[in-house]
Image 1 (cartoon, one colour):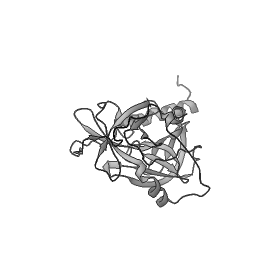
Image 2 (cartoon, rainbow, N blue to C red):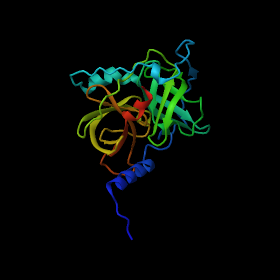
Image 3 (cartoon, rainbow, N blue to C red):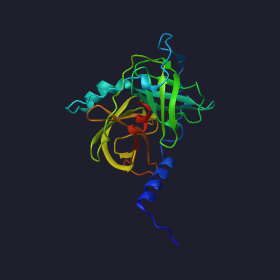
Length: 250
């Protein structure tokens, strides 16, 4: 007897499918021959990192005016960074971004999964220094996010949106697909596939995992995570809502 398929089952099946077609394990982009030659560094001049996300001020003052894409990139491009990880044999590259001062940052869990703790390197835009992750605040494999702190003060960061974007609203993605640092793309929210999982038309690729998805008001609304790898030209991509990290910021 065939089992009846309900809308709940469809949502569950969708989540299972994207686990197999996401931007690949860890970051989606191997860097075996492109590993940067920089060493781990500390930009805080000996200052100790803060112990919890609660000590960072997450302030969102929404402007009444929408921003052009060029304005968003000029304002927040430097808040997005490249992530390099290794499992001891291979090197991988992903993306991440700051959501608060004192180095408070977020990325995808799969960018770090299975890699050596303490071997991660964070490369900021315009810098040849690789910063280090000093604290992992929380992480979730199910919702594919990791909240952590980078040993870097006075960083630029993207304010967090108070509301989820609606279907059809404009969004902008900043990440480093294929190692192309801080690539900017635009699109719309195509559909919500689960409470915190949105389908988007903004272009992303391997290495974009963990990048920022920003609305027209210059607020981060999501973490870019993957695309369907079936050879389709339909530009089917997805991102996790930034709402998944909000409970850990209060």
